[in-house]
Image (cartoon, rainbow, N blue to C red; front, side, top):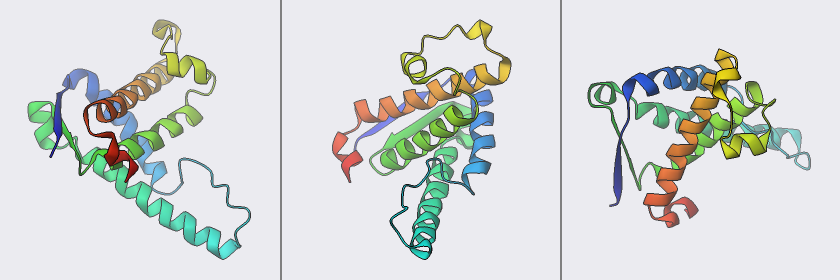
Length: 153
């Protein structure tokens, strides 16, 4: 089984995890992306949304689980074929929420290019942007270093 371990700087990552935890609370009750299921009956739409919400909640739980006591003692997180797809989806959900709540004024092009003058951003926006980049980096590491077929499962 392929596995990658990443050593992270605790002083840098810890404040970003606070941002993730804050957003995780909201994601426990609301989907990160709106549903486009207007052609479904209301009861089917509700069942579908409930199922997606349960999955999203579990994905975010698994992501946060990477940052446990062992992480805070050693600074290492591990990604493998068992958690890769889940982690990529959890990162996507949180990044969508960051974009919606804190980063919408920056625009997609700026967000994806990472060309932002951090010093001019207000502190909450700066933390959100750094968290956005952190989660994007996790996604890129997984996609680059683990077999891409796991993401198609």
